[in-house]
Length: 441
Image (tube, rainbow, N blue to C red; front, top):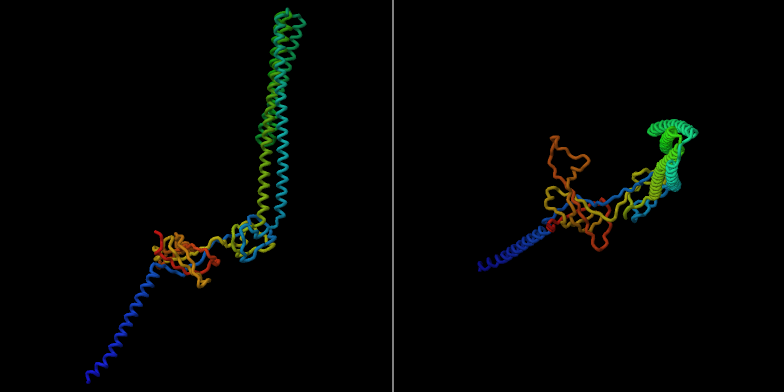
């Protein structure tokens, strides 16, 4: 009887012990499953809350000096590309454009005048050359006739001999006169060259005196030829009293005419220097017209720059410009936060960097938008640590070295879906979790 009572007392305690053991085993199994699940979810994740959004900030400034006449935007306004943000007073630039256009018109008129002068000088040059060549062609048959007459004439008379001597005297005087003119023209030409080198006279004056020298030289040569011909005629007349002296004189005269015609041809040919001078003047006028056209383009561009426009879509921030303010080129007026791209910069410890590769998927939460997770991927890994690019980088050569885990910036691109995502301001604090198991290696 007593044994049955003891057995009945042990059964509840054994049952309770079994229940406790089963519950403990179930709890242990649950903890193991939860641990494995947590490990599977977090193994390979690199997390940090040292991250913030970043984006392109376009500083807006003026490219020309001026006075602000209108500001068309306010802080935090969204603007489209090409929107006029600030307007400068265009009065001075309109006047500058009008002045440049007037200068261009004057330069083009000068070009037309020089073109007309060049055409007239060219026609004059060609006409003079043709006249001189015609005179030369006319003198050559006369020489042939005189030579035929020479062969037919008889003896010369004393009067004809005296005439021949007189012609020699005249020809000699002409030679001395032509020589004096040649010397004077030569000295003038040499003086012009020195003055031209010093910039004291114009090139046109030097060209004119050079042409005069060439003409004097031709006259001197012609006078020498005439003297030589007169002397030859006198010698022939003195050697013979026959009429042949007259005929010979006529021959020499005709030769003199030919020499004179040749000198005229040379003189007309020397007029080509004036044509070249007109051509140079035209080239200078055309260069000035091109410079005036460039000035018109510059004035047009400056007038257009009085309206300062947005380079791309974005939000206005850091506006410091006010109406009436005098601005200078490259002076900051406002900043435009461009809307086309925003990314995240996460500062990762160097000990975790080896696990991260471009293309790794990233989960991003923004402190300003709780309850919303963004997706992204690692775009690039910084080539330098944050401390090495700081304004005052650490100098470990002082002997006070303390090893500190360095942070490397990692750029994360946001993968916006088809649904409209809320706009993210630049500089927001973020928490990122980089999944290093999904990298495409």
